Image (cartoon, rainbow, N blue to C red; front, top):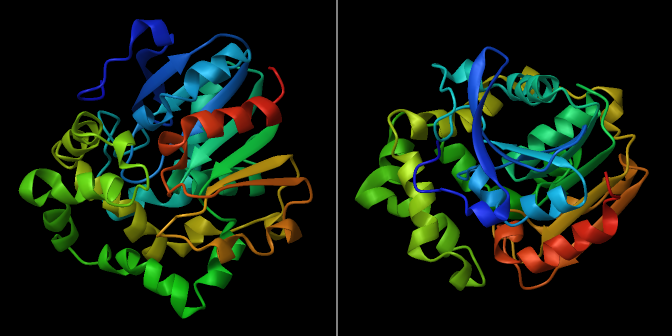
Length: 297
């Protein structure tokens, strides 16, 4: 299971392994019932990033699954860039829902997990009740923002990650200092990312092959754009909540512009003074938003 994270039994979070889509996933689980809240983490995170939200969702009657996505932690790590095409990762999420045996599905996602959730909802991989995305814009809005210098400058690392081997060496140098810095350095409230938290992410990234797999998500997005294809004009036909930490240094606020063109039933909640790591840095505020917006299961 995830190195360095053993959930407090009082949290109600349990760890298990789930076979889905020909792979094995480490899954953090809480709650019971036939309405699954599937929580999808981003880069360079883990299911650990949902530790504050899982008890709340369980208390609202959801069965909560937060997987370590393919390539992360102790989940399966298939070889090759093509194995990390976004459409294949969407298939993972659909297969996890199938494996759960649940009858209804709500997606809660952040960062790269948000990209997968947007694709899942747009392409209707499975019917969903509601969609929650944190600090990741609608793919059409992000593509529009990338036409402008400001967002291209913020997204410099996406180009860097296309290089062979060098990104892995950079991210893992000096005991994975760049992984630790990604959280502590970007955070506004740095007290939320003490060494015992950043150690969890750094140690997971240092597992054999993990860093290459994590970066391969970016390589596949550039080399296999067909995996990012959108159906239905990019429309999302379910109620959608965007939670956005306004002090995101990787994604500008302008990436939210025009989202309502694609999402008729849209709610946006912006949190000033909060970084990209919104659900970990401001869990009380994020949980209050979820408590209000999500119905009981």
